[in-house]
Amino acid sequence: MPAARPPRRARRARRSRPAPAAAAAAALTAAWVNRAKMSADVPARWETALLGRSNEMVEAARSLRHHAELYQRSTDQGACAGRWTPPTGNCASVPSSCAWSGAAVSGSPEQRGRRQSGEVSVEKITTETVRPVARTVLGQRWTDLAFLHWAVDPARVAPLLPSGTVPDTIDGVTYAGLIGFRMERFGFLGGFGVPYLGTFCETNVRLYSVDGEGRRAVVFRSLEAERLLPVLVARVSLRLPYMWARMRLTREGDELSYVSRRRWPGPRPATNRMRIRIGDPLAEPTALEHFLTARWGLHTRAWGRTRHLANEHPRWPLRRATLLDLDDTLLAAAGLPGIDAAPASVLYSPGVPVIFGPPKSLPEQAD
Image (cartoon, rainbow, N blue to C red; front, side, top):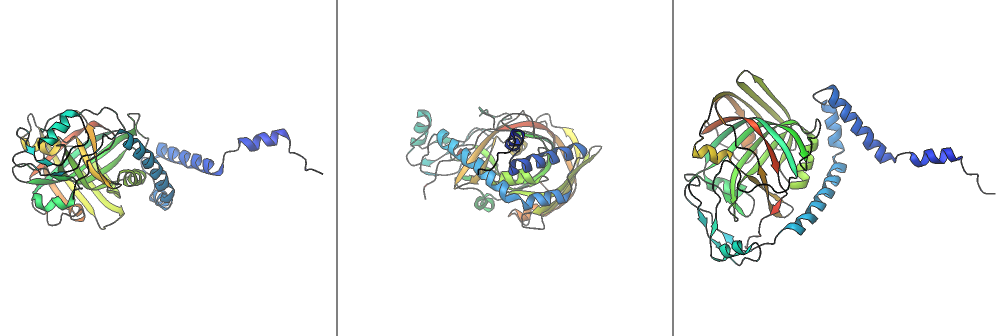
């Protein structure tokens, strides 16, 4: 005799019951939102537990990266082969030229003609981008920035840059930067910022690069960030060297203090403590100050290719600053040991809103 079917009301309730995974995700999201409303910070044990569940997040990020790769293949305009020789001279002057050998197989007719003639122009240093972002994939705001820079030998940093890029120089030297700030309203596709997770302290170590298309950019050697989830997503999606850290940014009058201690991953210990005093506004920054701040993209090595991400923001409102205190091991941990002299440049900015476009692959370089 067949088993009796359960009452219709029970069947309807069973169908409407969420799957265990969906219920768990909903519960976790609600917990994060409630906690964000109650407090400006999350207990360390929450983020530690989240780190223990990072495999699931990594798989989700890989799925996102896979779809981004598919889109990238459909939008890339191709590649060209050849070896590029870096420009020389003062990059703050009119554009330099660089030699490009090899057959161009993609790009506009004008680009193909320039490559085949052996000339590629390096873009000028400009206070606003000459390559506006046509489609926004990321939006954010950078606030309370401290810019510390040291002059370094280009030959020293060249091995630290991704394939297809070389050190960008001014007056024969390049620079290593240590930049502390607060990220705010981080969000996707130009929409609203992600609550709580989209606001955090960050301190990065960066170098200056130029590629075979003549685009100046930055290369990050490390990025300390206060929130774990953005760290995981950035490491998986674009292979950016984000590090989870305990961080604090405080202000008393015209003095700002930045503190960071790395949690994960190594190398550890990697710490930073710096304090600056804000000075007078810069009505007209020098060529060097433009070189160090007016950067309209980043280079990164991700999934077997060097990528360029363009960014766009208003002109920097810059002020002079005085370094009052510095105790740092982030530079050494990023592959730049022995930088212990006073910085060549110290600047402050109250901040700017920023948007990023989709990543574009650099042409493959011949061996």
